[in-house]
Amino acid sequence: MIDRSLAPQFGQVENIELLKAKPLVLGNGLKIFSIEGGEQDLVRIEF
Image (cartoon, rainbow, N blue to C red; front, side, top):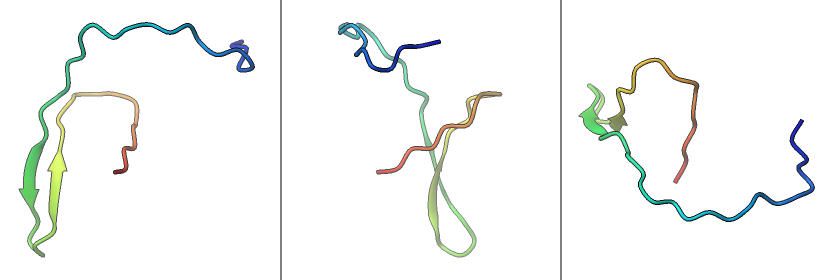
């Protein structure tokens, strides 16, 4: 089990690859962005 009382070691990120979001407009005018990433765990991102 992870000991959450200890901070993880710092490490520099060398490269990160992000999937390209596809902008869509729904029939009611709502603009959304879709990312096709195949089968993956659910992730929620809020800005």
